Image (cartoon, rainbow, N blue to C red; front, side, top):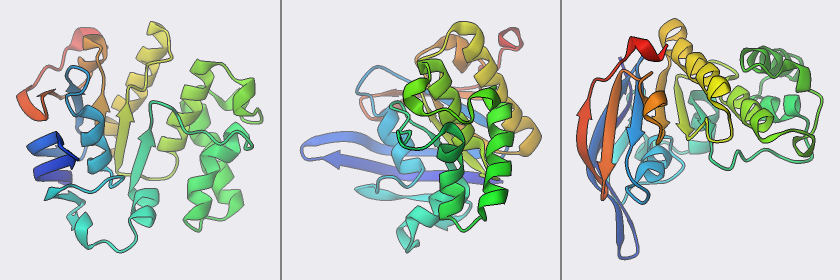
Length: 227
């Protein structure tokens, strides 16, 4: 089953064409790594895939729904898409657990259930012991774990991760990739991962190379030695 599909997607910012006719599908249980030089369109691709931005032309579908026809994209994102942003976007006035709970509560999940889901996700990300701390009290690596837990909470079918290992040492980065990989293998999630590290791309089923807003190359590179 295809979870996210982009068809001939372009995105223009003034005179700059960030993406130029990109087509990509990610299926349930598949981890796709996106690589390429700075400015190649990687983050733009992620934003379009998750409905955070709209294409200039072409269309994006999540679980068969064309996002152009979805009246409440925010609700769809909260239910179906988990994000790990480069800048994390944690709310300073909320504890780690409350940050993870918030998207679920906004979607109507009761606080007790949202907290149960949040604690499960924090435990998965190895951050259960910091549930009551505020972001300013956490190290960069701990904040990254909280952001990943927020993306994992609930039953989201699509996970989008923009350099999720950027603030982590190699061993912790491997743990996070193992966690994303298990979400694909055990829960059937689709993961779209932006990374510049071949070590982490090796966990993927497929690697897509972007250059100048185009897919320059795509192929399977699953390496058992990475795991």
